[in-house]
Amino acid sequence: MGDILSAASLLLTIVTVLYALWYQELMSALEIEVPTHREDRPAPLSRINSILYSRAVPLFVSSILVSVVFIPDVINILREVFRAWIQAGGDIPSYSSVKTAICIVVAFSIAISFHVGSILLRLFKIKHEMET
Image 1 (tube, one colour):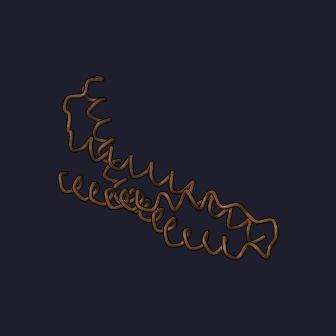
Image 2 (cartoon, one colour):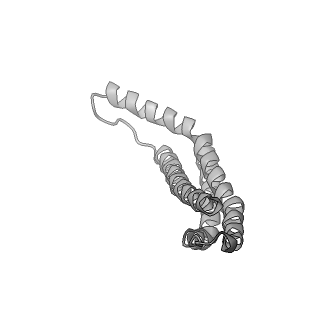
Image 3 (tube, helix red, strand yellow):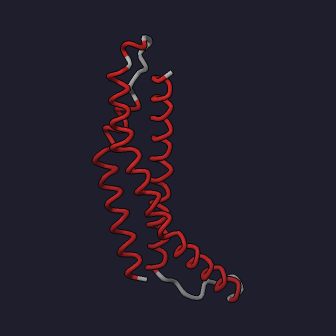
């Protein structure tokens, strides 16, 4: 289990560092106003496309992959805890900080995936508004 925790933590760290490095660019892209005149849209649309495909999409895909890779382990851990809880009549007979940490790391990865996914959707909405 320690190897799984190490791998999950390392991958989440990579995703988190990328998120921290690219956060300002993502937020600034969300503040781009759609020009009223179509002739004024190519420059901001180019900037949206650049941030969308070089930052938001890779960050979203990587956070999803980290989550998906370790979700089966979390399901097995939760199943094991639930069985132990049932067999012990509501008491939790043993505690594993490593297994708990794996669940927390994956929960953070899922949370980042949802957050970056919401940013991604908003960027696609801005892009669509500029293209129409």
